[in-house]
Length: 602
Image (tube, helix red, strand yellow):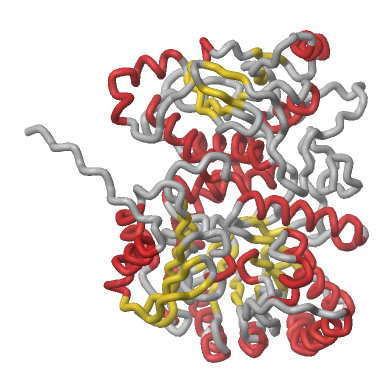
C-alpha cells in the first residue's frame, strides 16, 4: 500500500479528532461512545485464592482502576470467579470484572456466568497453535472456520443471554497456524483473526464487543490497530466497536513506560482508543498512575491540534501509515557524525548540556551526546509557512530541519506536516516539546517522560526523523539517557540488550519480577541482544519470534529456555535457570564478559 492508499484509519492525520464508537457496557461502566478513556489492569494472584484476588481487585480500584481482569486457565479456575465477585461486591466495590481466557472454551462458558466481560484470544480459542507449516486450501480453511463457529457460538449466546460484554483480543504472539500460513506473522493476520470471530458474533446479532490488537513491538502494534480501524471503516458504519489499547510484554521501569507510551500514546494521538492497559512487569497497582498520566497528557493537548490553515489545499502524508518505511533523505555530516539516509539516528543536545557533561563524558557509557544544537546549522521553520518552506527547498544542499520553538502546535501533527511539506532530501531533527524546559529536578517526572516517548517515538514509528533532541528535561544525563531509550524502544537504534517481559498474572509460573531483575543483572551488558522473559506459554513462542533467547515458565518453579521460538532446554529449576540461560547464550557465540568494574577510591 502506498501513501496514497484508499485505506483510512482517522479523519485527518494533521488534526486530532477522537474516533466515534458505539458504547459497550461492562457492568455499570460504559466504554466508547461519549465516555472518557477507561483505565484497566489485571491482578496477579492465583485465581483459586479468593482472598488474595479480592484484596488485589480492591487495591486496584482504590487507585483508580476502572476495569479489572482475572485469568481463568480452566473451568475449575473460572468457577471460583463467583466467590471473587461476591467478595468484591460485599466490600462495596462495583468495579467490573473480566475473565481472561486462553485455550479453554469451557472455562469461558463458566466464567461468563460470574463476571461482566470475557476476553477471548482468537489465536488460541478453539484454534490450533503448533507452529506447523502447511498449505490451507479454501476448503481446509472453511472447515476450520466451521469448527471454530461450533466452539464459539455457545459463548456468544450465553453472553447475549446474561448481558455480558466480550473483548476479541488478538495477540501478535499467538496467531493460529491457519492464520500464520495464510497471512503470515503480520498485522493483517492479526486483524483477520479477530474479524473472523466478530463476524460469527454479528451473525447472531451480538454487538457488545471490544477489539484489541496487542504486540510487544510498538511498530507492529501501531500498524495492526490502524489497519483494524481502516478495515472496520470499510465494513460499514455499524462496525464502530470500541478499542482497547495495550503494548503487551512492555517490560518494567523506564523502558516499560517508554515502550507503552510509544504504542498507546501514538494511537491516542490519532483519536484511537476507548480503554487502555499499561502492561508492566511490576505490581499491577503501579500500572495505574502511568495509564492515568497517558490519558491526561492526551487530553491536555486536545486544544492544540491545528497545524495548518483551513483554506490550504489538502496535504498528502509522506508516509504509509500501514507499513513502516523510513522517510528517505540525503546523508549529511554534522560534527563528525553522518545522519539522514540509512545512517544511525543521532542524539542532539544543547551547548549548555554538553558543557555540563564535558568533564564526565567517559563515564556516560553508551549515553553520549553526539551533536551540539547551536553548532548543527539546523534550520527552524513553521511548517504552515509556505515562504519558509520554499526558502529551505531553494537551498542547493540539504539541511537539517526542525519545527521552530514557541509555535502553538502539537508536536506530532507539526512534524508530520513538516515531513510532508519540505523536500525529502532534508533530514529532520525531532523534538519532544516545542517549549524548552528552563530547569529540571533530576527525577524526570512521569509526564515529561511519557510526553517525550509519545511524541518522538510515534514519529519514529511513522518513519519520520533522523535525529532527536529532548527539550522537556534540563538535567543533561537524564535527557541523554531517555533519548537513547526512546530510540531503542522504537527500534530505531539498538544499543543495549532489549527485553520483552510480560506482566505478571495468575498464569505466571515463577516470580516474574525477581527473574527479570536477575536476568537484567546477568545480561544487561550484551549490546543488541533481545531476550524474552515470559511467565507462561500463552504468548511465549509467538512473542519471542524476534527474540534471540527466551526464558519461559513451563511448570511451577520450572523454566524452559528457547532459541528464537524453539524450546531447547526443559524443566530447569528456577534457581539454576539464569545461569543456564547465560550458558545457552555462550553456546551460540553471543556472550561477552561484562566489563571490569573500576576500582573505588577510598
